[in-house]
Amino acid sequence: MPIRADRKHLYPGGGIHSKEWKAFRAAILKRAHMRCEGTSQHPDCRARNGEPHPVTQSLVVLTVAHMDHDETHADPKRCRALCQRCHLKWDAAHHRANARATKRAKFGQLEMEELFR
Image (tube, rainbow, N blue to C red; front, side, top):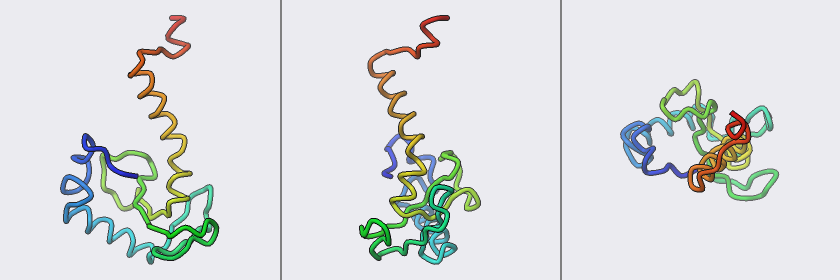
């Protein structure tokens, strides 16, 4: 998932192009032996970086996922190497919540419970 410009400061060295972030990512991928570390949705996923995904057949590009959705840290214990399939499924609910919040902010809509306070 691309990092928004306003959130780059949260990543080691200021973003994904910094030496610090590249070293952090390399350490996570090394720990994972260049394979997806899986999630509770797909615990046995071991798709290999640079090869076709065994399920989707798309080329696997491993990403680093914050398993707690907290981008304010670079803690290897709270991050995993994930294939696109696992990362997108893991983040799906988080993405929906962010999309709802963005839409509410853009259009000034209130949550139902806010209407009845």
